[in-house]
Image 1 (cartoon, rainbow, N blue to C red):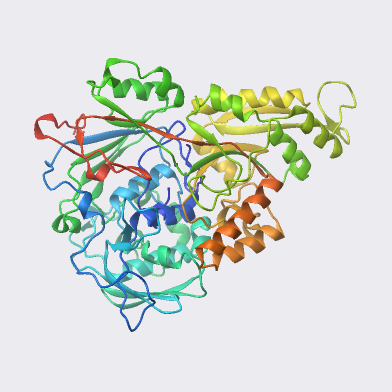
Image 2 (cartoon, rainbow, N blue to C red):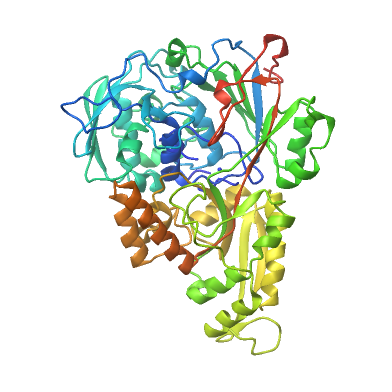
Amino acid sequence: MNKNTYLNVLATGIFLVMLLTGFVFVKALDQLRFSMEEMNRTVKNLESRIANLRISPVQASTSPAGNHAAAEIANRRYYDPDAESGGRLITAFGADVGNMNMLITNDAYVSEIWAKTMDSLAERDYADDGSGELKPMLAESWTISPDKLKYRVRLRKGVLWHDFTDPVTGKEWKNREVTAHDFKFYLDVVKNEAVDCAPLRGYLKDIDRIDVLNDHEFEVIWSRPYFLAEDISLGLIPLPRHLYHAYDGPFDGKRFNDDHERNRMIVGCGPYRFDKWEKGRRIVLRRFDNYYGARLGIQPPIETVSFDIIQHPNTRLQALLSGELDLDALSPDQWINRTNSAAFKPDGFLEKIEYPTGMYSYIGLNQNNPIFRDRKVRQALSHLVNREKILKDVFFNLAEMVSGPFPKTSAAYDQSVKPYAFDIAAAKRLLAEAGWKDTDGDGILDRDGKPFRFTLVYPNVSVTYQKMLPIIKEDMAKAGVQMELLGIEWSVLVQRLEKKQFDACSLAWTGTLKPDPYQLWHSSLADVNASSNHIAFASPKADELIEKIRVCFDSAERNRLYHEFHRLIHEEEPYLFLFAPHSLVAVNKRYNNRRVFHDGLKTNILWVKRDQQMRVPGY
């Protein structure tokens, strides 16, 4: 995947994890999660990685965050002071990644790696629901102007980039400090039209510029008010210019996209450094010995983290049971029917953890296909999804039905809007009103001589989809709608999504508690390749609501606008909204400090007693 990808098959945010660099470690719905794009990751990581607002009484707005000591750092209280250092943590990815450059590969797995290798300016408390104050990470302090258009940041001194050897020039880089210039470079790269990061660029479009004041101070200047400006400004990450612009002359955006050697590695400033990528087998990270957080009490105890590439869920479960994996997601079927062995008993070595997520799955209907342009048709198709049967037979009631475009755990979600009921008669009536009738008696509806036939594409490694979609296909046929199913390898599917070369797709997004609908739903992105609006949805009323949401700083009024937007999208139904699956995780009990927060298990605070520590095979 050399381009902006979306989905995070079934998983934050960050930028929202990278801008924001912190993401939910655990994967749901068969491990393939589709992050809600950089945009969503921004806020997700922000909700998970944003810092304490240090506001001077003269220059900044009246925020509850007062002055803080330079040594303060986010979430230190969750690290066990008695933790023993060392050992490994092995989890799994359901597919390999295309490259390691998160700016051009909006892949959830890549975001997860960047979340461990890169820090942002600030971070929220793990136990926070997104409404509390931000705490410092790379930033030592900051001020916010009264109009919330200028964020002045002072960086910590002595924060170092990971050491590395340039794979092209062979030059060795050691002990290079992170400076304000690296943050400016990040923004300049994102804003470069030649760089393949359209979703991220759209999310940052209202940042006018970054002004560098000196090596350790800079200002983020916004061109207009935006309700997420604080989160995004303080969720910014640096980008290593010495890696990505290691040549004379101006920065070349196309060269950045195609720099395959450098895009096979990550150079960060976070707690773990990129060590090795064995294509198709595993990605290994090692703890960074010169991590600035070590002197501030947030050095992760675990020494080595490995992401093993294991596509099939049952193979991953066997790896858990044999001790080859330490942590992984379970499918609903596995949770109910495959965890009765001794390993999962109270005295066994595996623990099951369940919690709600900000994810929702959907079937997206490409609005460029004439079949789907009539709202009545889209509503009819939604009436043909037997959500109650799927919830019971596929998800074993370990999910919730959803009706709209926001996480069900967010106040943005209008709980009064119910999903379309399974009603074949209602679907047939709506389809007839839209001009679809079976004129030739072959059992398939037609209009103007063309049959109602389309192909739905989905990730071919997802067992959940393999069980769910045939049920929907069978019920579609009862109303004369012929839906063909096509499972596609992940990288190929991403390419088709980016070019909008599909009829319908079944995927999922992971949202945030303070969502911005712009990236998914604004008409300005409907015709943009590789945008998150891959179904080419366009609605003047939706655009109007989105623009109002983006400049609304009052949470109660913003929730009212969110709910109005939810009702509009539900009525238009360009997505057939499906389920919010629970996150179902299995973790080895030898890990201490297993704490589950609102967005999941935090692996960076886990530790293992020395006599129980293990090594990654071959390392």
